[in-house]
Length: 547
Image 1 (cartoon, rainbow, N blue to C red):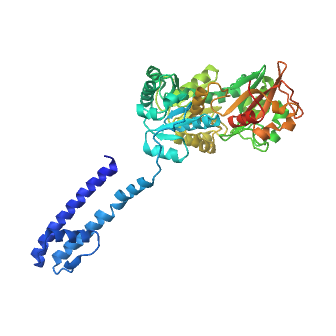
Image 2 (image 1 turned 30 degrees about the vertical axis):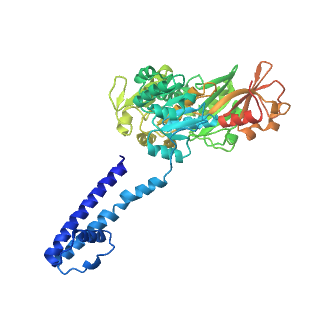
Image 3 (image 1 turned 135 degrees about the horizontal axis):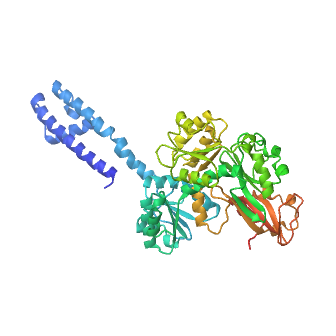
């Protein structure tokens, strides 16, 4: 019996008992005070009339004060028991009758889909990625209210328990391409065990919260076990090491000496405050801007009128020497000549990865955390100015906030920016929705765990797709383009038509990267295209085919 039924049953028992009690009192009162005995059934009728305020029949009025007081009390009791009970008992019944009905099983023709158990913020990124690739998916939500909310938001969801055989069978797991277990560690291992019982051959991917428990996920049968926090730490650390080392960090080689890389624009760089057109990046460094992050929002291709600031991260293509020239432009004059220390705030899994990566790159760093530990240099609160001062925040070159609490991170950004207005401030965000607030607080670069995790899952599932990195939805493809043969790039206007950028052309075994508007595509040319998933899909549908 569910809560509503149990509550209703208890209410009815109490209501009937009170009515019979009042009927007995009324029967006795009429004999004792009014001298007009009535039957018990008549007394019960008067009580019902009084409770429901439909009238008092032939007994009214009463001559004695005792009976009038009794009727007044009965009237008030009836109002409380009946009319105030409507919102608690009756209204939920009507609400349930007209509420959205969430499916409890997948449609019969669903196959080669990804089963997601359950939907977390990182799962939302995964679903977006699957949608961009046209891969069908189905979400299992054991909680009825969450399932209804997801269903009303437009997700493909069923109300089912992923830890039960019936639930996974309802999701047509045996016809699926993959299952993603994305809950707590115990729930994920239980889901994997059930999945292997329902469809042993279907690939399973499990997300681990505690890396020490990875072994148990694999013992349960998981084919892939992902720990996104370590990847997040590497991503945060790269924003420091890329800017000060002679290596270009996050770069992907397209051809010999030709790469795609992302470079953050640092505070006080010569590029800050200029539009892309005014910056002259193409003329000064020879690179192509494929995309850019503006305060956490990615645009590809970016508008020439978009203004660059210290929160902008450029995604560019070019030869190593060209990328080195751009790196010089993105760095501030002060930081170009001063390495300085990096303060790492937080020494959990993410912070540990960050400090390890910085040390491996030869970057001096100070670790700060609330808990004392041999690897922690300063024990203190990230929102405490005195503790931050002990960590040397006023003289530090950069700070990385690896705190697992977004609210505390936002406050810490404000405190740190007040103590050192010129510091490079890199922050971790648990939820994607909080990224913009951190930028408004004063962060230079924010990386969301949910976004990194979702992209990590997508890259694991979509093994055949080449993506640049896990915190962005951009890819590089090589393809022939029959629709462009004989036309110049200016005539084709690829960017306007598809949102992609032609960053190179392989012709006769050599990759040509110096591409102007008058460059003409020949038969047999293989184009190197960079763009978002949606953009490359449009390019493939309209202009190209793959070998």
